[in-house]
Amino acid sequence: MSQVAFHYDPPVQLDQNLWEIKGRWKNKFGRRMTVVRLNDGRLIIHNAIQLHEDELYWLKSLGTVSFIIAPNVFHCSDLAWMSHHFPQAQCYAPAEKRKDFLDKNVDIKITEQDFPKDISEFECIYIKGTKISESVFIHHPSKTLILCDLAFNMPQVYTGLSKFFMQWNRVFRLGPTKLTRWIFTKNIGELRKSYEQLFKHDFDRVIVNHGETVNQNGKALLKAGYKEIFG
Ligand SMILES: [Fe+2]
Image (cartoon, rainbow, N blue to C red):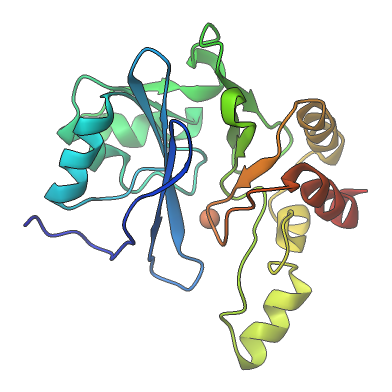
């Protein structure tokens, strides 16, 4: 069995053509990889994590891995690893990371400008106004919004001072954190416009990188979290 850096849970099917793998990370935030299968059998891997052989076989059994996406500048760690296992896949990352990936011999397309616009069931939306260059995605058939760091939904895994800080930072409900606003925002007007555009789309489930997936009523909960921080 191949060695991987961090443990992860078995894949969970969330909906038709939609799966998640919840993984550990260097800290209690954890992380999540999402897999979407398009109607033509192509697979999209969002926020790749290193997998053992069993899960690599599982992926191959689902369809053809065709797209691997690093959703923002902070979550690019395992894209190159996944790309080496699926060299035929197109890889996407923010513009700022292109040189880093070229240094690793991974040819990257720029998500915000190059991601295909002709995939009817899967839409890429670039969120402007932040320092993290995150693109978010909507899988229309399952009414699912896939985010990375633009919203957290952590369980109560902290104690003591950490718990106090995380509560202040608003990580324990679906929505952006205070640090998103005070450290990672560079143009609040543009960010607000992007969120407002996002809320015009139809979605109900919200997948986040840090914390729990919200399977119902995600749009209303995300809106409430957004208003608390940016409203
Ligand atoms: Fe993150």
